[in-house]
Image (cartoon, rainbow, N blue to C red; front, side):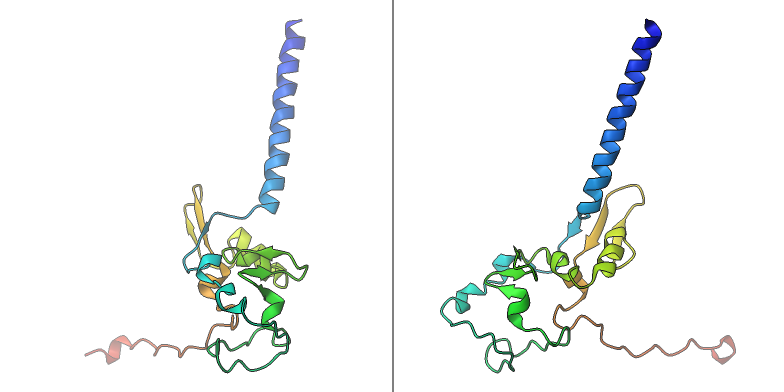
Length: 166
C-alpha cells in the first residue's frame, strides 16, 4: 500500500508539472515579452479625434499639404493613412482596433518573421541578464512607422597605422 501511495504522489506531481509546462509554453507562444515603451506611444499621446472628429473621412490617397505634411510614407506606399489608423487607435487588416502602445501587433501582420525574431530577442535591442528579466524595445522605438528603413550613414575613417602616429 505504501508503494501505491508513493506512485500516486509521483504521478500526480508529474501530471501537474506537465500541465504547468504545457500551459506556460502556450502562454509564451501567444504572450509578449516584457516591454519598455521608450517613446510616447499611447493613444493619449495621439489624440487623432481631437481634430478628425470634426472632419469628414477622406479615403483618397493624396499629398498631405496642411496637417501631417511632415509625414512622408516610404513604407507600404500603396497604403493610405486609414489602412492603419482609425480614430485614436491603430487598425489591423481585420478591422480590429489596438492601442498605440502595442504597435508590434500591427507590424507583425506583414513582418511575421521579424516579429518572431524580435520576440526571441534576435531582432532589436534586448537588455537584461540571461537568467533574469529581459527588456524589449517596441518597433517604433527604433523605426519610424512611416519610413522604417534606417537612413544610410557615412562609415568612419579607418584607424591610423601605428607607424603613422607621431
